[in-house]
Image 1 (tube, rainbow, N blue to C red):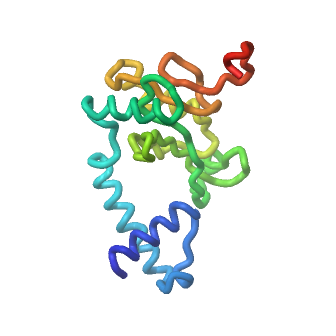
Image 2: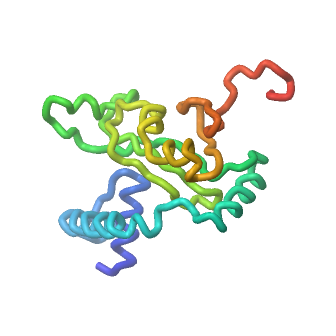
Image 3: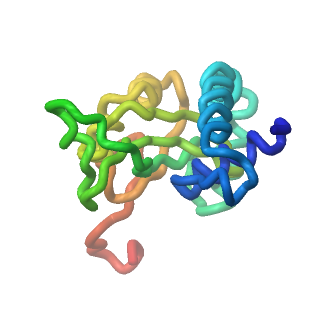
Length: 177
């Protein structure tokens, strides 16, 4: 299988949560080997590519986010997504069952204005709420200690704070509507 084919197989798996080797002209055994190989390479290269911009580029990131939504000093958009998994079995298997009823990991990602991945946390079971993942994350510590000068934007699954903008659920003034 070509390197291009290996990458395509992995992206199909990541985006659609399943891949059928037969549909792509590859055996399921080949697909399993490729997924393991590419996942290992991504994990090995992750620190080089998955990181927040350094100081000179951080200002550019803030300007790009401002052009998108007029939020001042935003350096990332944060959210969680459920990645389907097979039941891990054992006594704690039910921890992986999410609120929709299927087994998953709840993966938190911080993205840049051009869909760059700045941070990823993929160790939490599907039953864990987004806010708990954030409250225990390195990115929260970095922002609150001002090691990353800026703010995040997130959805209502996250707590509103000085460093994290979330939607106002019941705006009380006309200017917030």
